[in-house]
Length: 383
Image (cartoon, rainbow, N blue to C red; front, side):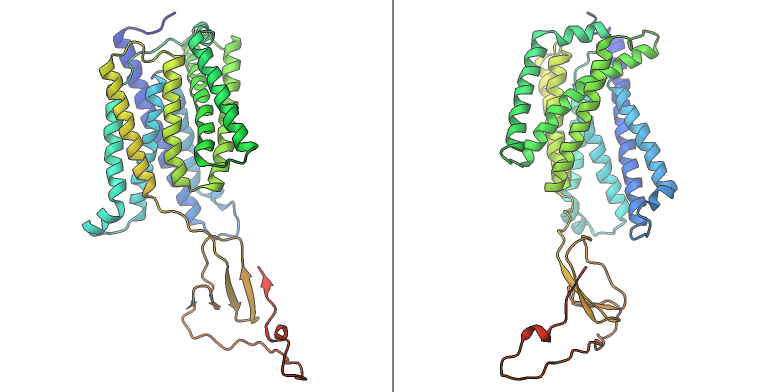
């Protein structure tokens, strides 16, 4: 089995894979920022799909495809233990782009108070990325179909897969049957699936690259098996992440998911592809130090993001009809109503004094001291 190539070829392959991963993550971050800018610019439009007609959104879509393609190809050249932690570049770039798009002017003290943690997180993430790339594994395997099959039938991989299946089934039982909707449990399920995704993506990408070089690998059954595992694991990851987003804040999910998924992918690369077999203790310790710095940096970046405010019901009074309306669902932020008085914010949005509401309520004849309170209140109309 050709586990590693010559040092020069291995170093060149790692460099190509690392640069492709960094380039791909930067493109993905830029694409997401462009698409979000397109959505925000068309907020309130009558057509909910109006962004499909904008060049900004399509430009972001094209950049996203290019970025994900670069990430996919990078797995064929660089070790899984290096490509997986480089997702921190995407979070770092998104943080910088978000600060640029805000276009807010702060004094140094205000900036340090508001963005100090994010700035420190960016420094730690940059330093950690440099360290784990410089001291990461420098071995590259020629991923032929025969080599992948030999890995799968090896006892370390079989033991690893057995433990992973048992752990996944146990977590899934507590999540589904016991109703344990804890964030750690959901993201552990995502991380375990992510390790399968990393293994299968590296195998599929490596065989496709060899096929492009003239060594046909697509006819082997292992290629179809790995391709199915890749697609299935990605789909189930998306489902679990979607469920987590409904229960918890997205910034918290981003930080914890990066830590758990990266750790799982590094372990998978070490067990399945023997990426740390030829590394000494110093390089392994420095790699772990760089990864820990990235974990801390990403945690600080995501921790400092603004959390979305939960929706609170409010009441508005339409001045033309004079009917109170209860808004108990739909929008997250209370909108400004022109020509109406909003009781929720106690602010007259049109800048004039509240007019007398043209509500004519007929009072029933009083026959006793106790009147029916229901006749003295206007009927509330549900939004």
